[in-house]
Image 1 (tube, protein in one colour):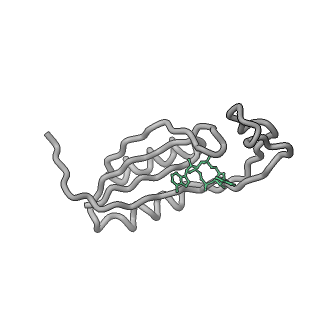
Image 2: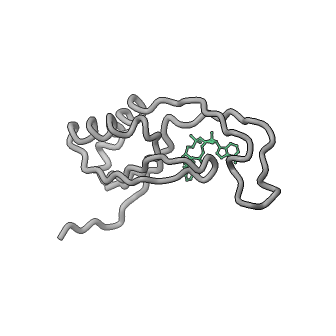
Length: 109
Ligand code: 2BA
């Protein structure tokens, strides 16, 4: 069994959730925050059989678009002058960042 953790953009999350559930995957969806942009994203936790991982990755790949996003000056501050950003910076976010992990044991009580 594998545990797949996928961090995706909020804009893609509802459609991805629907497609995964329709395909018979068990999904937990969590609100999360990107460390760099400090804006919301969505993290999916999906436990699945090893044999379905490729199918799962194909769905995530097909549903999640990469988008360019501008980080405004001063938007990434934490009160420390070293973090100051004086000019807008454009970054490409996503489509998805995915971790695939082995599961030693899964219990469902
Ligand atoms: P954020 O940390 O908000 O990052 C958003 C985007 O900003 C990243 O897109 C990347 O293009 C850029 N970026 C991140 N850190 C940067 C830096 N130090 N300097 C310049 N640009 C930087 P993605 O790579 O697609 O990441 C999207 C979101 O996925 C991230 O949001 C974070 O929440 C998560 N993520 C990505 N890689 C991760 C990792 N190795 N571990 C945990 N979470 C990760």
